[in-house]
Image (cartoon, rainbow, N blue to C red):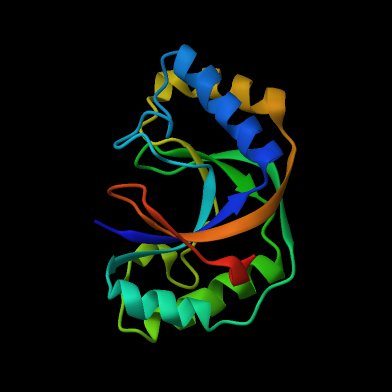
Length: 174
């Protein structure tokens, strides 16, 4: 089980991303809509923790100063070598700084960070299909490029238990 520190989107963006998931599902491509527990929400993950004290992580993040509103600009499709495909946001210095602040807070609690979220390794992304087959890439690309670009205001943040989908709100990270 992992614990993820995630940014969540406004209702318009969430609806657009869920419609994209639905379109891919109709095409036979599994998305986060049906992956594992089926309670996934469109999100961008700042950190994935493999070992942690939930109370300590929550308190450390709640102690961070409130952030100004953040808007992501999704305008590209990406893939990881393990077959996960995703939407790529423009990587701004503000986004990188905010992620570094979150890492500092969670690591101060003694939490174990998944290595893909370490400074210099993190690739910000909004997951679409966790197990994409190469033969389906053209179908995904066609669907994605029908809806991009997406201006994606971040309106919420949460700690999400990746095994259950349960969430703890982090209002000050927005």
